[in-house]
Length: 135
Image (tube, rainbow, N blue to C red; front, side, top):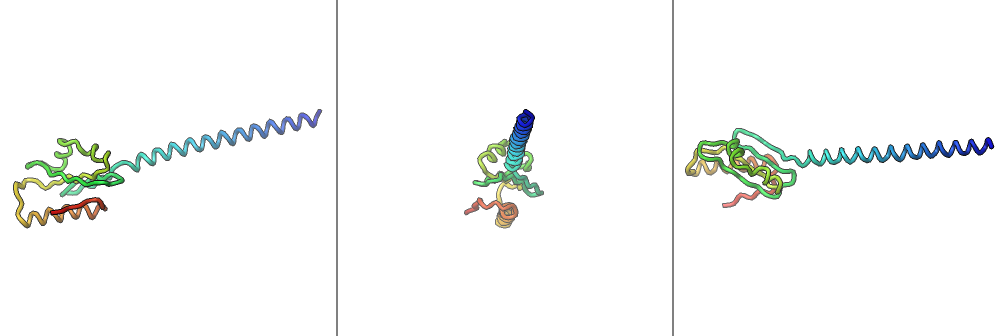
């Protein structure tokens, strides 16, 4: 009888330990999934680069590049406020370059070259590898 009680006690203890490890393992997996989802969410947030000359908003995966010029007296922040395209562009993996290049009705050759340098600088400095600027 005594041996039967000891074996019964050992089995119930082993069952409890086994159940504990199963529950512990499931809990660890649930925590890991939540952390992975949080990490994935933060990795999908766009990168924003702000300078005196431009503001560049880039998605993590870039498939296109859009350049927006402001109205005559405006700047990049005015364009951002008036033309709500940033969220749509980022959702479609398109980078948006908001320029502060304003108050130009027409451009002479020197201004064209200056503008070209600004755009190429923004593209090259921020690894925007999916941009094509042609003539």
